[in-house]
Image 1 (spheres, helix red, strand yellow):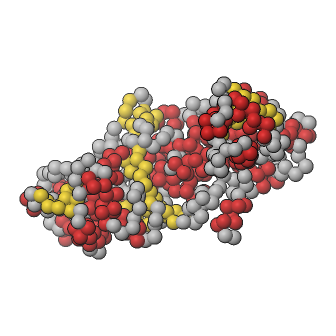
Image 2 (cartoon, one colour; image 1 turned 135 degrees about the vertical axis):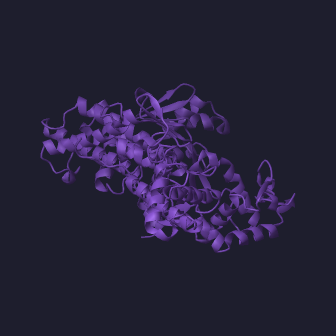
Image 3 (spheres, rainbow, N blue to C red; image 1 turned 90 degrees about the vertical axis):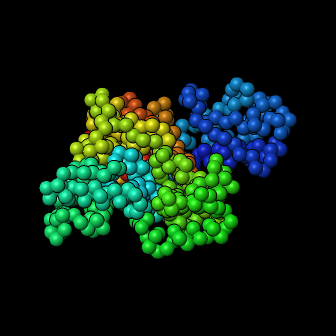
Length: 561
């Protein structure tokens, strides 16, 4: 099936249907063809199910008063076709819509008919996109900041997959530069300490217990260098050991990558030199005091940046130069969309890398790559900030958190706030089995839906809406839960479009709240047959909906709690 056909077969949500009807009605009143009504859920459910400000936005171009135009729009709507039971004008010209309960409930049919497709879109139409995340220097275990990045990158990748993109997850190993040199020297210092020498960790070196472990393994496997003379051998050994260590961290977190790219390969393959030469030919470089500069101000930077330091300062390339070369490889590998998930400390890098890519003049569009920057994480336990790990020494590792609270809680807590907001990770809250713990609360909602079928000895997979009168689902708690479930496709699209998985976490929490409220207020089993059958449909749709949201975030959907 073609991408276009797939797009056409995608079920239309009620919001889309109502929006299309508003467009038709507006055009019948003289609105331009590109009219785009905005629909929102009223904050107060008593105001209705949907609200629009369309009359207010069209009032000036159509030369009418907003309230008069609102009345005309309502009169022009085919309310029966889109299940509107009432349309009311509020304030200066807002229109609030109330839906027929049975019409809204019939939206559940889409969930049960194709549960694996519920919430999916084909926006990307199979186009390739690379999402680069974590990309930690192989100088130590992954810290809690890397963990937030791993959760964000993995969830963003899944959201893109759910919306039709062909996604590759990529880890860029920074296995070159001064930090790797310091790693080698730190390992050498530990090797010599094992041999009886006084410990002398170099300035900028690494003090964690894991360095001692690497040194011990090095000595055991390299008896001929027990004195630690072969610095290059120790560098290679330490990098390999820590790459393996980080792989174990990622496995514990449930994150898998499709490709690993080594920074060192950019030098051995000559890509850095080739990129620098191309930038020189572009006319955007100049020399000053022996240093080579890139005229990044031509592309919006606040000042021009050093590409290569003067010989007096070592003659090294600055860190953004290999980044430019690396992103050229992404473009050449066919990734015409690239997304980098990085810490907020990389903010200045975005301008420099994009400037370098534009200066090359090889057809890479402005704004390539996209960046998602996240703030750091503060870990709290017992009311106090936790700053160090027994193994890492100076910081808390991802595996420390996973050992404390479990993978699901770590992932959800990382994703429940927007990436650019500060995150306080409360270990005590994440471990608690209470309604205050959001991940426990969400998973309990799923387990409760499963429990309904278990107690009733009913096969949930066999539940269908065939012959069921969904119009009996008219209780306010039922309608609120149905609205939450039917919002899921739009939430997925918005989260993917904006690269914001916290929207899924928020939807899960609100849906769980609606599910718990319904569960406590209304029985499913033991009611008149018509009500029981309809509520089983709602319970099954809720089970499937919550499981889908959890799956996007990389969490499990337990059947018992």
